[in-house]
Length: 129
Image (cartoon, rainbow, N blue to C red; front, side):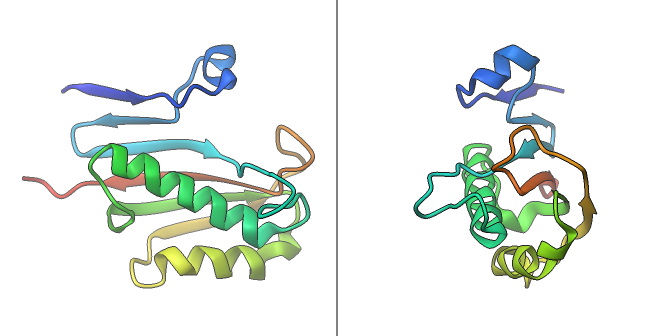
């Protein structure tokens, strides 16, 4: 089967040796994605806006692979503060309330930078043709 890597130009892709997403056949895996914290729309202390921003970014990656959020079968959500559940869940539901992928919500001690509160990994499967 053909392998398709999606690169975004992030310096981390070269430094760490990874890509934003990989598609093989009808399966898509999207790497852990954090928000673009700009201090205006997305703030370092706002788990809702970070989650929403992440899911917008993931949606674009899926579109680049001729897929959509409807194809998502699993989300893995990592947070540095389990008390952010309500805010994260609200943003997640805005994208997935009708799709309802399997999901997990995990508290971890740190992410790669202190301004990141949330990181999300995605698995999607396209319908067979």
